[in-house]
Image 1: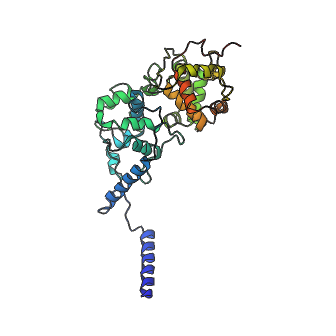
Image 2: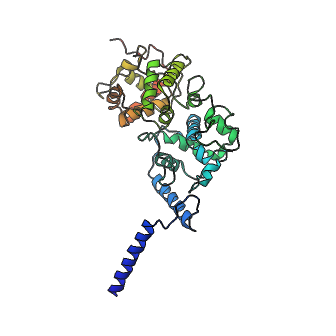
Image 3: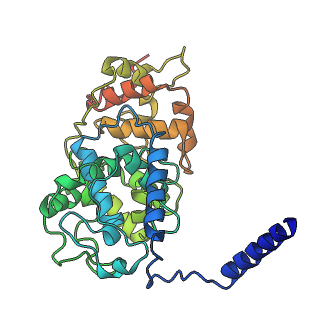
Length: 364
């Protein structure tokens, strides 16, 4: 009996080795899986997503019903996902129909936490990438907000959300990556930051009137991978120094009303005190010492910025990923002592666009 066990084990080893080294299973995309293989793999993927999604916790300041967050997700979907998955009312390109597995049209099959997990981590063996900003756990919530409402969009509403206009794709199917018109021309930064540089009502941070020096430094950091962002790194990486300088000059010359959108949380009065005076007991430095009306030319304006972005940035400097830029260590040191309540209070005050006299340190 034992002899037959040895023979069976040897046969299994030899057979398995032959299967592996001879490439017996045809992995060509031109050939379908053997019956049953595809459904088993797909169900396993869904099981993984469901299990991992249970452990995802949405931050308190994220509102999946926020139109700005939904627009941001739609814009990223248009530039990062549309090529393979198509979009509302926009069929996939025939090129991707030859992939195994075939990238599906999306129909809102997952919960928001599961969409976050998929966008954040991607899938092996499918061509579905992980989030480009490796440490930016905050960013994929925008995609989760949009995908959770995917079925509510038709083509015109999707293009309006993604681009701010309904003149995006004229052809029947989306153009494949690299072909002219994959992203509608003339939009560029404006599709998220707005034609006026004021962020399309919370879709993205306000840029109008930021200093040219700071805009150049930030864009260069994204382009060189010294500042992480799944939104900004892929767009900034192809830009040359001349283009970056032109974009920076364009937004620096703009003006406009920086009245930010406050989050429905946070104590603005306490935030004012923290921003202007800091907290000796809490070892918190004054924000206005650097971000006041007379701030350095390479220090960003934050008074009047939307509360959502201020919260995300402060969390980033406190918890990481900290940008690898010349003065990032100063912000990291300033944010280190902040707790979640401090961050929400500071965001509540700065979003109100206080009078310039208010954002300067109090006279001593």
